[in-house]
Length: 253
Image 1 (cartoon, rainbow, N blue to C red):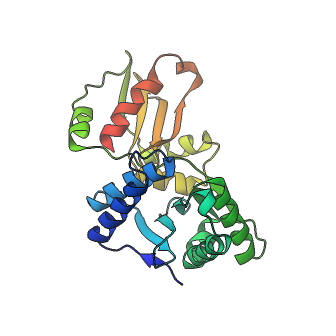
Image 2 (cartoon, rainbow, N blue to C red; image 1 turned 180 degrees about the vertical axis):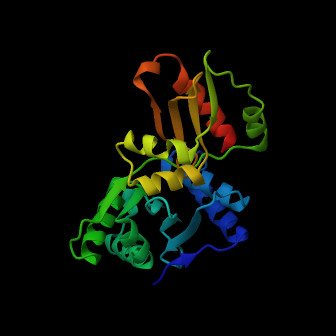
Image 3 (tube, rainbow, N blue to C red; image 1 turned 30 degrees about the horizontal axis):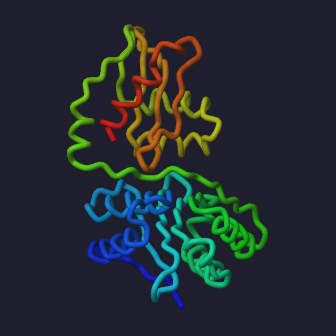
């Protein structure tokens, strides 16, 4: 058995239809996440990073893997697993081995794999990572964020919103050359200054500045459009800057 690759829009549409047959109300959060991701990919609007959609086994896949690759963030994968009652341990382990082996170089380059799935599947991947990399510290970072699909009407409504910053402040894109080091030094989950600056250059982010053009706060976009880092300097907290930064960041995205 091997991995099945979903390469065309038609294949992705068929996969989406099959998934919604099994969970039409998208009650399983992983199904809802897969639904949003596939709709964005089908419409050709996936962000600048690269996404592979895979299934295992290749005939009648029980697992669907969406693997996103980026030069500025860890490999990120969300896995739609079968119901716990239907899980076959060998298939779960074999699928994990195929996926990790396929992306071995990318995982080694970034040092870890981010994953969004149920706990049993996460445990399988953690075990297989330790097996393949011979006990090296290849940690799984569990993350529950993902894409949210918006219709054209929803996007138009968002884009028509008028954004008014708190008095005495203005909102503008982050100046990477001026603010990159400051932002990185205040971000406890930052990987390195170079990667933080690369993320600021690649993903839309917003800064708040006071009347003297001093940096007062910022909101950094993650790979799926989520806020991955939001910060307001202590002396300006409680003035509504955090709330004000979110809508324009989404509009830019």
